[in-house]
Amino acid sequence: MKRKSIAAITLCAVMLCPAALASCGDSGSSALQITAVGPYVDDEQLTSYGESFSADSAALSAAGETAEFSSLSVGDESDPSLYGASIMKVDAMIAANEMDIMICTVDEAARSARSDYFSNLEETFTAEELAQIPEEDLLSFDMVDEDGNATGEQTAVCGVRISGNETLDAAMMGQEYGVFLISNTQNPDLAKEVFLEIVNS
Image (cartoon, rainbow, N blue to C red):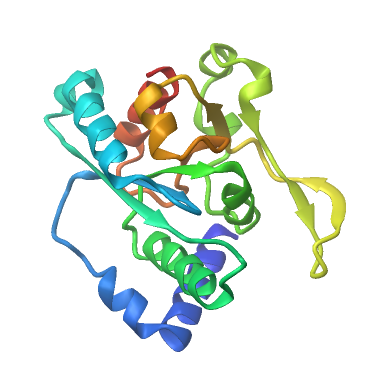
């Protein structure tokens, strides 16, 4: 099911927005890709957080790897053209394996969760690992029909609400946000470790 969803997004992106895929081409970097997504993301604050996090990350150090933090401000539906193009870029980046972890506002995360872009945390982590996270911070989202009405079903538990890091809070412009593990990450073991470090940072 996940492979079909990603293949469909790839086809859609190629047909509707070739420029988006071109701008998201293979950068040749093996760094773990961590992207902050929201209506507006403060690049300066995100860079500061990324530098501090990378310097302190035991997982990155042990693996001899680096992480690249980038932002994508998608705007909002008050500008449908910009918002639609930005959302298509997010989809294209995921389809092109250019995102391993997403730090995202809760409202934007709901759309990606319904598209099956995020890993099911209950399948990815052990019960003991999840028990270390407050239950109220575990995120899942209502499924909706074509008209946006709730169907009564929910997505899998796919993210963790985070807050309390002053720099990251500032980068996300004071909005409610969480961290999500991309389901098709090419570096799942390291991404899992870094995901937990972000949750606890």
